[in-house]
Length: 135
Image (cartoon, rainbow, N blue to C red; front, side):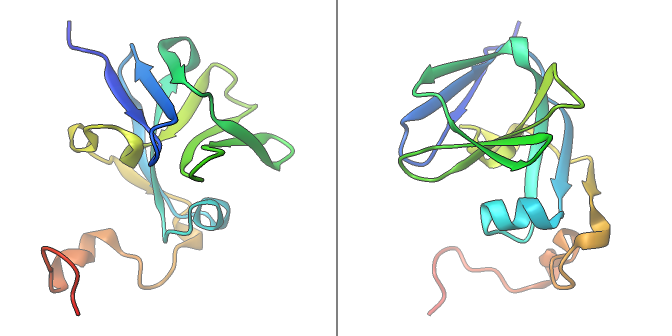
């Protein structure tokens, strides 16, 4: 058996441990995710709620629509979770909040109809890269 996956927010107040395997790894381009994160898209993965343990503080909740609750750290503001009432047993977690996000491989893009024209992750390899800040 593999070790549980762990992650948390920027300041470390909210931490979690996953006892199950992530599934449905996607880059979401919807307007709501973009606004909630301040990023051109958010990479999410799903996990069964019963396989998620919160350590330390639990995330604060924001109802971004009638059926959706988003979780974030009340101290640092990190976007952490997305829970839709149509999938009551599952929760989505931001892939970048994992301590080792490189273990996941995104499977697809969702809400592509709302993507920003310049936000094409597959085309980013053509751009120059800088190991640190470019200035």
